Image 1 (cartoon, one colour):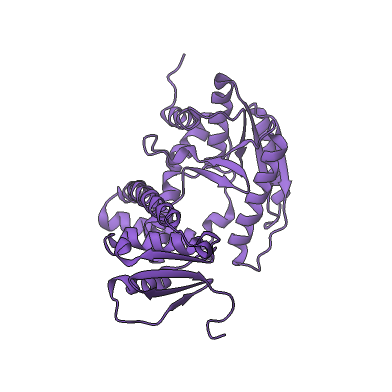
Image 2: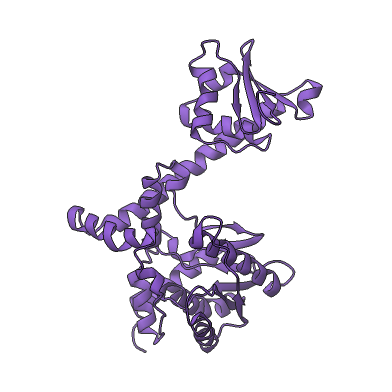
Length: 347
């Protein structure tokens, strides 16, 4: 028997590790027909029978390019040829009005994946596997840095999660597996698979394509060939920190909410927090706690609003209440009082 191609081995190992300890009995690969998703489909087709789980594929036809129907059918045929079953094709209508065509396609795609997961699942949604690689992660980190984002955003694409009620994992993001775009292309070639080259992946009108084709190659020429891997590792490190800080802040929010005693506070109309409880926290934790307390009223606040509320603790000079969408925060008698704000603060 000839030795197993290293790229094929890497993709299979990534899938095996990602599925270890999970209890879903049905898997669905999100298959575009490109090298990344085709290599993932082949790895899942190999590993699933050995794990005693059923494995299929779902192909989403966005209808954004001429011949997209033929591309979807070709991807479906290859999925069937490698043994995936069921193979589902979903044609969607993309609303480009909200956020542009990329955002519209992403929304439609995940909705279609979730619907297919519900259809294919046995009493619970099937597990969706998506083929983002370490290269995708590197690109995501650069985009996050360019937006001035925080740790959670720099943590990049999550390896697992949920969308529209369907569980999702991305096996190729695993740091140990180290699967890159080059890995998936080599795996396809070694297995005789013919990937589709999406013209959109060469269109510089898309920001991600410019990062891929211009920015990252420039960084590699100037800084060395390990830039992509280093950026992906930065995402791993940022995620570890963000997970830890989020968990600590969530525990602090639960404790502060549990300490509410007055009747109006138990009903959720107000929350009183000792300023000293926030003052002793480091900035990263304090800001997360403030966002969590605002979230108790259904408010989602950004950095500017968070900093304004934090100033009631760290730079108290008798300021007026801080109004943020959905919440009014006042400092009185050494406490921060979070209250639901309905309508304009001037009313």
